[in-house]
Length: 483
Ligand code: ADP
Image 1 (cartoon, rainbow, N blue to C red):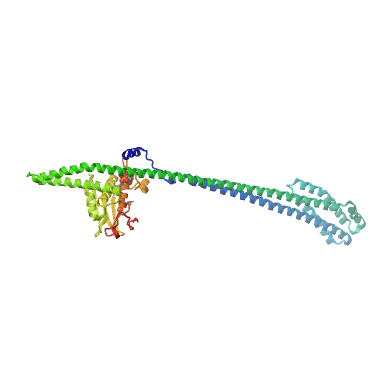
Image 2 (image 1 turned 120 degrees about the vertical axis):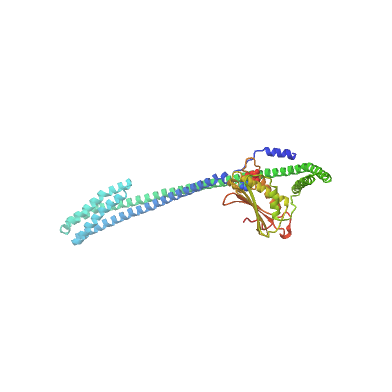
């Protein structure tokens, strides 16, 4: 494609400024937080379920222990009550009788206590209910033995012997054993149930973990994919920037070539006119010669700008020589060529400032660009003032252009020097990127700051003319840092 045609084609493309990365991917951290919360909640639920299962299991073990202990004590008390009854029958000792009464009451109380303990289990309750009449009859027999006492030994003995036939005590012991066995079986069943519950909750926890990890992996994958897509878009966008700049360079080169011819012709005509004027004896000869000589000088300057621009585009290297900064300032102020109401331009150059090693035309161009931007930024300001300053800076010179304008807009501050970034209607957004390119080509660095009292200051550095080697087009090692 022919360059101008390509330029037109690119210029017609809609230019889209990509939204900042943070805005584009804000949903990814939110998703991660939600997932992390889900993961934590799932783990807490699983741990809670496990804990409650274990607590339940411990409670059942304790409960069974307690029931078995109470049954064992009741069994023991009943046995001791029987012994006390026999002992009293043989000795008639009142103390043994008192012991019997206490043991008998304890057996009754214990029965009621165990009944309360197993109240939630109807089968065990039924077993206890079956024991109750046997226990009542047995205690009744022993009461009778105590009541008859040694005084009616024969009658009391017959009751004792009758029990041997009836096997009441043995029946009670059998029921106790049955009750105990049922309680142990119940504990076994409950523990099996609890173990199943724990296994289920562990499986649930692992399932939710796997689910959460899978979703986290999916989020990471999505994030990386979106990053890659974004990177691709940015690269494509950069490519278009570069090709635009290339096209502009080619256009500038062609334009320079085309303009050079009429400028040269114009200069030749003026030069001829000057010679005629000098030989002619007219009253205004002096004034006219001077005016034409100045027109020739300006044309020479224009041709020089074009020549250097074309050189720079073709070779990419500036023609650097030692230049006093005050001279650069004077040239820029003279060439600004903008008539603005109330505009005050001042300049301050530090004493004994070394000359800079720079391409006079290119740095002049940078200064003029920055001053034009400053004038545009002060369009609505009540005070319009531009201040140029220069001072020593790490082996080179620091030049500042400050204004009293609206200051740097926040949404553009981090991409000021990127091409085609502009906040001005009708602005192209290439001025600052060209300034950056020129300053870098002269071994310096450029940046901008907002002034605390309003307005902005653009700073750039240039190597001093005595900088080591004075090498062309390379970055000065001291010029990299901002103040
Ligand atoms: P353009 O002037 O065409 O917009 P530039 O590259 O020269 O392109 O400037 C880019 C942007 O930088 C401007 O649109 C403006 O927002 C900002 N800018 C440049 N100079 C100044 C300044 N002196 N004060 C405030 N903002 C500025």
